[in-house]
Every structure is written in structure tokens, then in C-alpha cells.
Image 1 (cartoon, rainbow, N blue to C red):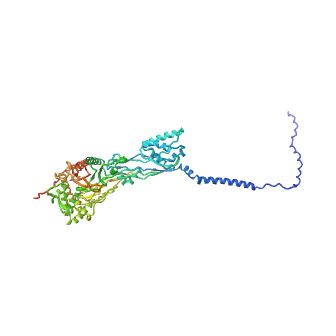
Image 2 (cartoon, helix red, strand yellow):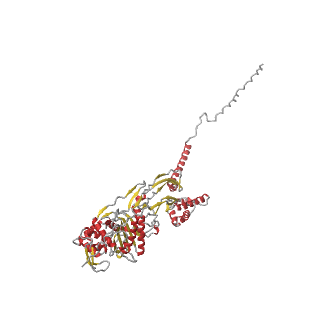
Image 3 (cartoon, rainbow, N blue to C red):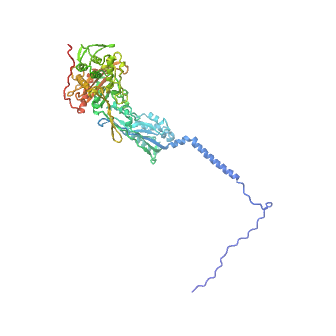
Length: 639
């Protein structure tokens, strides 16, 4: 059933607007004119003035930043920048012939600081540099005033070295102090005055054997450069090439994400010497003891392999410890065996005899009548002892070391003294006198040998027996090695070769060789030198070694005092080689100005020769001689 539909209600429509009020009548006098806007020029002037003011502010600020306060802003920018750091190359080692380290490098650090971080502006306190200096002084074993001076000399600097080549233990102590200071700063107990203290790895040169071969090795100075000996001579080879690392830092600290760039350092090469550490020790011990016992100024021993020219030992006394240069005697820092020039005395007679034999003007058994005095030039010559007229062979002249007999023999080298001088000069030069040894050692002296035209007055007669010319100890040893090598001079060598960073060994160039005298002359001269040691009338009997044939010669010469330039005291020496029948080793010893006991070369250098030669022969396992010395006649019947 459907419900009835309700009637629809009418929807109300929008209300009609109220009637518009009647328009206001115009003001009297205005009529119907249109409305007009005000002028925009005042507003534009105001905006322009505002913009001009803003530009003036920016301009002023720009002037302040770029001109007035440029230094301050540059300093602030300097606190955050790229910092270059040198990566020190590891210095190569120096070893003996068997690879035993004679000089090597261990870890060490340069202690550095950033003075700018210790200024009052940074720390907000005064005296920060002094506080840092007092903390570091006991650790660096330095004076606090000196450290403070380094920290304050240039306050705006970012880098200063406080101490060089400190061991790791020192850095560990400084690192502990830095941690303490950082902790104090975190607790607001004061500024961290060690914030800018850092380290740079450098390496420290050490010499494991102390003063052993110090004169040969030399040393490294505070700047890490070789300053003497092999260290100086081969510095470029040993030093390698430093690298470089650049990193971002701020306030004295490295920024971890600063993307550092690095150029790696190239290590130096290792250098192997011809020196044998054990033989060097024996030579150094022997000469040191004898110099002290004799109250001498100085002494040297040179040991040379006669077959190769290699120097097995080069010792001088007194020496020094390159690990402790601060307490070293400056006069001992060189290598006296190469740097001292002195008159050799009678050991030089072997060269005169070599010339006489080689020129064929005499033989070992040639008779030489030796008077007690020999007038020549402006003086009368004598031997070391007064004697009646001796009737000696040429061999006896050498065995008894007669100056007069040597002069008489040398006069046979030419029809005139001038001609004889020219001939002798040529042989002296070939033996290496007056010219470099070939080692190229820093400060080496070539000795002195005047041209024969300058052998005026008595010099023409003193040079044949070793006065009026000068040489160094290596030159003297080389003379005897030349005889031992059959008359061929082999240039002395001290460096066997080097091993680069790639591990490859590069041998040194082969030494030069030069024929000085023939093998026959060398053989005859060797037998004559044996008489010096083996014959009871010889001057070198203290150098005899049981089981070995020894050839040698004593020397005792007037010494030129280097301080006054006048003769004062003596140079005692002994030179020789063994075994005489199969030469292997030459040993030369010289002692300058002995003042206690004997000053004769056979008495004080003969025992040193024997001690060093015995040790060397055993060390090299050289077998004893298989024959006896020939025992050439020393004298003849003058009747």
C-alpha cells in the first residue's frame, strides 16, 4: 500500500539586493575630473640610495678583507693548508769484504714543532713556549733555554726542528707527554702546549764496531750527509733519493681524509769494502798499543793483498768513535794513513835498489866499499852508526841499511849526478810517488816529489835513501806490493762494489796495472829484502815469523814537525811481505815521533809487522813456506 505523497514545499530563492543608495552629489567645484596617481621618483630615489648604501658596505668589507686585514686572514688560512713532508731515503750500509756491517742505519726521528701553535693568540696564555721547552728539555737532553729559543725565534713559522735523529725511546716519552697534555686540555686545566710537537722519520747512522776502521769509514753529519771517509766519498751512492709526501693539515694535525699524495723514497746502495774486519781489528789493536807504549804522536798500519791490490786493513792511532763525535779529538777525525805526508826514510831504499838492478849497473853480489863518511855537495854523509870502512855487497848495503852505500849505488845510474837523478826520478814516479794512489779518498795527499832539475845541493843525495821526498802510508805499502807482485804495480783498491735497491751487485772496475820493473829484478830484490829479516846482520830481525820466509825493510828517518816545519824527532817504519817465496800479503807500519824507548823502525815497527802479519796469514789460511831463504852474502873480504 503506497503512502500518500506529501505536498512539496516551495524552495526559497536568493534574497534580492537592497536598493542602491542614491549617488553622492559631486563636491562643489570638482566637476567630473578622473583620479590621478602620485609620482614614483621619490620612491626610486629612496631605493637607489638603499642599494648604494649596501654596495658601500660590501666594498668596505672587501677592502677590509683584502687590504686592511689581509695578514690576519692569511695567517688563519695558513693554519689549514697542504703540508709537504720529506720522506728520507734509507742510507745504504757499508760492509767489510765478508758482508759484516761496519756502518748501518737504525730507526730514528727528527723531533719537530709548530711554533705558531704556541703563540699567545693561539693558546690564550703567555709562556706556552717556555712550558713546552721545560717539558721537552729532560727528554731531549737539551737546555730548556735553547729549546725555547727555537720555538720563539719565528713565532709565525709552522715548522722547526728541535732535535735530530733521536731514538724511538725518546719519541715514546714525548708521545706520553703529549697524551698527558691533551688530557689536561680536555679537562680545561690549561692549553695543550705539546699539540704541535711531532716527528719525522730520518734514520740514525750507527757503527756497530765503535772505532774500528773509523778513519776509513768516516761519519755522517747532523744533516745526514757523509762528511768524511767512504761516507763522504760515496755519499750520493749511499744516500739514495728522498721522497715527498703532501697532506692536508689544520692546527698542526693531519686531516685523515685529506687525500695525501706521496712520492716514495729510493733507498741508497750498500757498499762493500775490501777491508777484512778481523784483520782490521788486529792491525788497529797492534798499532794502538805500540803508539801508546812509545809515547808517539801517531801511527798507521796498512795491510794489502799483493795479488789483487785490495786493502785488507787500514788502521791509524789514535782514532775516534764515530758514534760519539762530540767527544772526538778533531785532529783524529781524518784518515792519517792517506792524509799524512812524511819522509819515508830507509824503506824508500828499495826503489833505489830496484832502479840499480833494473838498469843493470849492479847485482846483489856487487861489491860496495862503504867509508865512515862520504863528502857530497855541502855536507858529509854518515850512516846511523860510526863504523870502520865496510866491505859490503849490494845486498849487504840494503841489509845493513847503509845511507852511504845507497848513495854510491845510485851514482851508477848515470854518467853524471844529473843523469842519475833523471833515471831515479822516473822509477820513483812509476812506483807511485808524488801521484794519487787511485783510491780517490777525501783529503788524500799525493806526497811530494820535486822534479829532478830541482834536486839541488844535498837533496840529490838524500832522496836515494828516503829523505827529501814524502809519501803516505798506502803509497809505501804499494811499493812493496809491487815487488811482491813480480814488479807490476796494481792500483790499490778499497771498494769491492755496491748492491743497489734491486739487490744486484755491481763490482768496482778492475784496478789498473803498470809494469815498473821486470820479474827478474823483483825476484832478486825479494831475496835481498829477505836478508834484512833473516840475516843476523840485518836490521829487521824482529819481524821474522817462524815457518814463513819474510821480505822486509826497516826505516828510521828524521821527521818534519808539522807545527814548526823543521826536523824534530823521527819516523820509525817497517815494510814487508810474506811468504817471500809465494807473496800473498804486504804489511806496512809507521810510527810518528816516538818519545819513549827506541825510535828505530826495526825495534818498534818490526814487532807490529810481525803481529799483524802472523794474524793475517792465519786468517787467510796461507800455508807456511816450503823452502829456506837463500841467505845472500852481506859482505866480502876487502883484503
